Image (cartoon, rainbow, N blue to C red; front, side, top):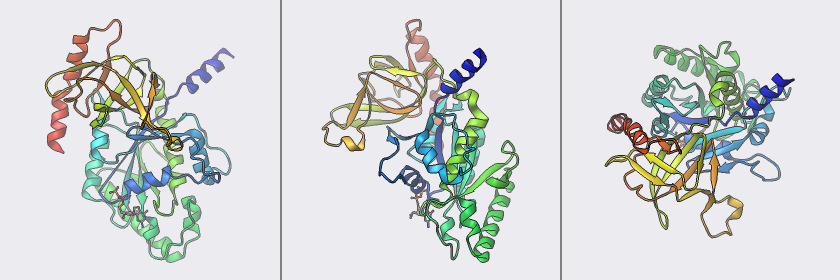
Length: 362
Ligand code: GDP
């Protein structure tokens, strides 16, 4: 019984995984994000989906609704509290999300246009994901462009495919196989998600359409199962802070602010924080912790909601003095009662070289 209670406690304590979207330009990364944010709930409620700073939070309830069509037997398990999806697709946000050389992105979606297959930036993304050892799935997007595709909006992929004409099924198979071969030529084994018997060895391809929503339930299901299977250990709450500066932005009335992804731990108003700056380390105090005003609260004048405290995983805007020279991609540390501020300053500055090699490469 004690063991059971323990297990329950740790499972309850899983934090939300952070998900990034990468891929070649025009493959549909932005459209896919828009589509998964869209709600298909009758009452028009967003199911608790919340817009954050630089990210969208999908609570498990919303994911349950969105995956219902491919979970008819009810066997899918939901252990993580939700999914935090980074809103800016592409290399930049993926490379900025790091801590000590490892990635804060727990899982990624690599988007490939089924009509184009492997493209130059697909290979770049592949290399990034491999370097950082980030688990990922491939969304083989734009299946609605297969000649004569008959769309069944927001349907599971397998059912949609089964209802297509033979010629459409053949074109699909043909394009899928070509892309799988192209991936193999780049050193990566891949398989269609429902034919993948070894997710540790083969990357799963999930066919999607950001226009019709087909395959998106499968994609979400795959993300959730994969994170739960492969990384429960990494998703425990840590008291230690893991946090990174995604963007540095000037906001009217607030001055220079930083948009931060907090992937583990807690941030509080007033905390003393340390990060990497162009002219040396920056140490300052959090003046305000801000998230966007929920859509339904538009009558409220202020654009932001203030928080005394925020808990991982989430995207948050920090207002503070002296942020003008903060560097995107920098780690953010909190000076605790037993910490020596100078030690932490040295620690964050040790990332500087890496941050610049990234800047000059991109
Ligand atoms: P990104 O550059 O990867 O973010 O690509 P976008 O999301 O901006 O999409 C590029 C273009 O492809 C836009 O014109 C989209 O409308 C179109 N597109 C994206 N996804 C799909 C899809 O699933 N089907 C079709 N037919 N077009 C798509």
